[in-house]
Each structure stands twice: as structure tokens, then as C-alpha cells.
Image (cartoon, rainbow, N blue to C red; front, side):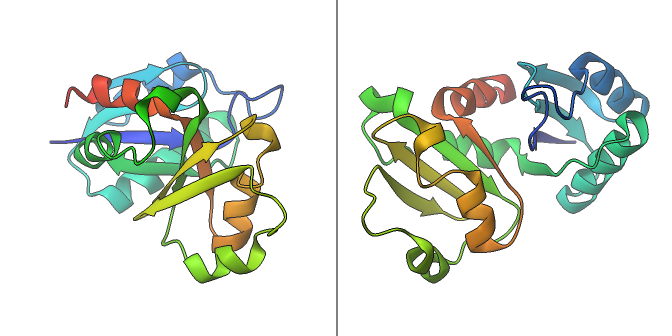
Length: 176
């Protein structure tokens, strides 16, 4: 059985896309997922499954559509890959309050990113690590030029972002 981390995009933010995480956990167990736990109300899941990763993503997205009538992108990583990511912070650990990880559902094309960046804005810097981008903001993330919308526009597929502390807490739930 593989341990997975599921990151739901844009749920329980404001009044849109409301999902009861306890109900979702129950439905996932009914669907055959194992040891389902969630962290916070913002769409962070840790669970086990015999299914391969691509099937897990589809199964969770279909379950959310069926149970909540919401089309939500679910970004899935193996527990092991999340643990490895949690060890790779290229920025100073003392800056963890200003570090975020954007998870993508596909590869990140650096040339597209450079062409879309506003050269006059230098409020953030980033490091691409596979299908993730670690971002260090010099100011509030919501004012950064490297938010989710930027990455989705540059790469053409869904993205979701978590604070570095959240990634570390999810890695602890995976029990790395």
C-alpha cells in the first residue's frame, strides 16, 4: 500500500468550493482508501491506496464531484516524494514564514515563465524542483507576482500553493 498526499485546489477559501473534510474522509474510506486523515480545512489529505498515482487523482476528483457537485483539481504526490521535498528548501530556514510551494499537475517550462515575468517586479524569487516550485516572497504572498494564476498561465495546467510550514506538517503526517 502506497501513502499519498492529496492537495485540493481552491477549496474552503472564502465562501466558494466548500467541502466538509470530515465528510470527504468518510467517503474516501467507503471508496476503499486507507488511513485517511486531513490537515486543516484547506484541502490537505494523507491516505493510503493500492491504486497507482494517476488513478488515485482521478478517483478523488470523481469522488468530490459525486459527493459535493464540485469540479476540483486534486494534486497528488506520494508520501515519499513529499518527504523528499520537505528536505529541499533552497532558502534560509529562518525565512520559513515567507516560503511557499506551488504544486503543479505537469512539467514546468522555465522559458514560458521568463517570458511572462514582469522584469520591473522583483518581489519574489523561485526554484523549480520537478513539478514543484519553491517561492520566497519578500512581501505578502497574495501580492506576489508568482501566485497560482501566474503558474497556471505560464504552464497551462492546475496549480495549488501551500506555505512551507504546511508542507513540513504534511510530511510529519506521512511520518517520514
